Length: 500
Ligand SMILES: C[S@@+](CC[C@H](N)C(=O)[O-])C[C@H]1O[C@@H](n2cnc3c(N)ncnc32)[C@H](O)[C@@H]1O
Image (cartoon, rainbow, N blue to C red):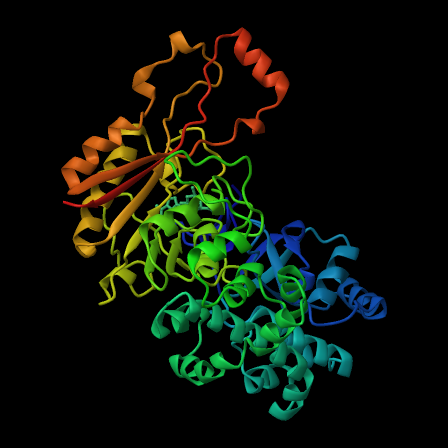
């Protein structure tokens, strides 16, 4: 730790005071190597070497410049990025200075690129090209900025900014229209769509009348005989969205046929592969065919499905294809690719309607789900694929306690006829251990959940086997397992429950 002026010390993430608060809007002396240029917030096209040369000469002559302005670097802990003073910083570097007086700014929500642009228009005007590019970059980073906000920062009239960004605005509006359309089709209420997309509810209301005509070009291309992938590509829609239009009004069985999914009649559902058209590559991805079978047997068209841990989006995608509504949530937030998966963290301490989340809480609305598809991450102390706060990281006792709390609470939130499809597997730490040496206290077998269902007011009605494919294991691995008497796990079950 290095002591700097005013009692601030160098901590892991930057300069901090004795209360460990990162210092901002104060002057500090920091190593020049901790200061970086970040091109994403630099408004000029290039750095002017002549200007640097003049500044360097001034410095050697003993001239003192104003301190440069920086902010803590959002991606590089302990480093700072320059908001204003790139030429001065370069000049100081070229004269061999190792520490520099800086002002560490807290921009308090102001867009850093626009702040940098405001600073840049003072001493030497930005060129026309730089001004235009800055406006466009600022808008692309944050489409919520208005033209006058951008205009103020770059010293241009609102109308000039409008002309700089007209094409971007049109593209984003189109995107937004598709997002609204998609969430609406999945039955997400207007207030939650507005909240999720960060736009006023009135905008959603204005968009909805267009809902009837938006699919027309898609329908026209489908009727001309173009395939679903072709139409999806042409219109910038996802395939499941196009399927939802292509299969509109058709019964489930016809939909299965057109999607090329053979319908399983017995309680063993087995597939070698996930259907790549539905859902994203995601740890623990389940086949869309599996979701489709749950939907077919345990729900009807237009029913509402609740998907509390939505992950890669297989459930909402399959719901689109089979004409179900779907409310999907996950702790991982991907607003651009998956607007329909609303951010929600199920607090492991059992505070499930935590005020910490900004989203309106879905299960408090009047409409209750007909079916819940609950596909939690399996228990695995070693699971590195999920977020640190995922329930898969919990020790066994806490992991099971989470389910007990969650299922008891869920039971109080649903209606009498709601069905729950719980997807889980036997978990045994078989990886390097001969079967006979495994420690059962480290395992969670599917029976353990049965006690929880009983305690929390859920009654199992069906147990369906839907094993994971063993084809994912390499032949060499299989041979080694056989030699060491390791007994692998491919079991996976869907336990369907009704309220008691
Ligand atoms: C098995 S994955 C779901 C996969 C999904 N059905 C699919 O096929 O793409 C489980 C999901 O639960 C989420 N998750 C884990 N703990 C959570 C929590 N406490 N709150 C919200 N989501 C959580 C993870 O981020 C992960 O995406």
